[in-house]
Image (cartoon, rainbow, N blue to C red; front, side, top):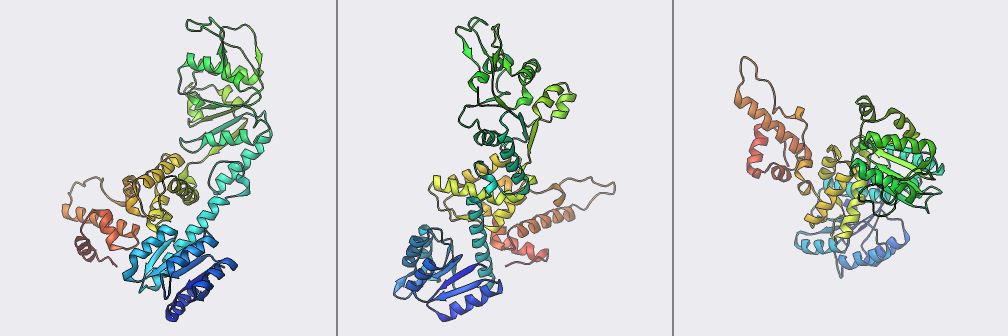
Length: 455
């Protein structure tokens, strides 16, 4: 059970907060003494502190600093009067999670406490994701990702097994390849990687196999290829689906014989290399189109690992967001400590066509562009909060032979958009007006027109 400490010099406030928090099943401790509050934090497992800024002779800011010295990760929500908002902002800079103004409503306490504890839970999950993920530089704890962690750890033990990693662009195929190598007996040996789609056939062939002096016009000296460079280690062939058919034949021989021959050479060279390949291509269609050799596919597909896209493991989104927010807020020295409920809901629903790479870039961009304590919906890129399934808003439809009433159709479109925006913001009129870019008075008129509620 979560334990919450209430620190306020007014008995009525303490009793009111105890009653509100008891409704959610929380265990509460309360005190009016700043010294006792710091002592409780040092002795008890406190999940959250509700701290009044005005504690008589001592400032709540001093108490906050003392609590942070005892426990730097302690979660503190500041309670402040209307006249001390500036001090509340100062508290955020010191490390408070958020602040709430007096007089407060029970619903506001329920919500801010829930969000704060969810943030704390996410931070713990980021730090202690799973013992299965030890040694793997990937973030998430969805069943699909935990299965991938288990696959990585198992195949890493068998250092000669060829691995084929599939998945959309941005899902983390390179991270899986690195993890397999790092957890294997080959970890102290070279890890060599190359993108097979980035070079034309002749250059890729020379890069992989090397060449002897005079093998072709520009071959002034002998060149050792990547297969030889990776000897006793691992070679990662990224985007192998883009490899030229002629080169596929040579790679097939390497897999069968574990030997290579430099261009222009006349002898075979034994190699001891684990081959890890990856692609975002659909092998079945490539084989049908004669773009990829079926026999090579089966040689590569000894141990397949498929990484599903983010849209198929959405439970990883909050953990990834918290991970990247912690990383970039620290890197850019920004005060960001979490996401509002509507911002998180929007990002949970977003399609993420660029997968983890896109999510990472979005968080980095937000941290560069904004200097706020909490990331809200309006801080998100337009493609995220502006995305709406076509079925929800009838922008495109066939006009029937009997025609339409234009005003009725336009009105329905407007109503659908207002309802969707109102739902995104949780019924907050100010935020709804902001994301629809209309004056608040105009929005209130439309809410009354369509008989929708508002705060």
